[in-house]
Amino acid sequence: YDRAQDTEAAMSIAVQEANTLMAASRHEEAIARAEQALSELTPKNTRLEMLTRNIITASLVFLGRTDEALQNFPATQPLLQQFQGRRFEFQAGYLVALLLDPQGHFREAEKAFRTNIASRMEAEHYKDAFLTITTRVELLLRRDEPDKAAGACEEALARIEETGVAGHA
Image (cartoon, rainbow, N blue to C red; front, side):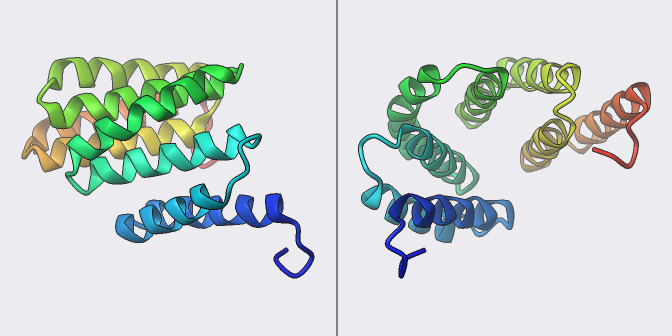
């Protein structure tokens, strides 16, 4: 795409790379790649900017850099609100839950995660629901709450069985 001078396609791939790095728990690299993409995005490409800022915010939380994540979130929030659709609503809710947890708002974070997971399941966004469940479990384990993490796993299995999509999430 670089040789073809298709900047938008190249930036889309850069954002996908950053997302893949984040999914692989290579958060520093995800942030670096996302920031590089962000610096090259055109002002009109708000969708890619929103996705890039989501990656940065989430990666900062996973690295324990909550203050930086909170500083980044205000730039992300208006971008999420520009787009219509449940997927963007779900992403906004996910980021809120993710940011509540490291601030010590555990009850609110749990409620936000549960709501987000239930909404994604109802909308049949099973993969995203599963990824949100894994994040919830990871945060519970980081808080040294293995019983709650096990309970979250049991809830997830029950939800999967209820939907009848086992093996297709």
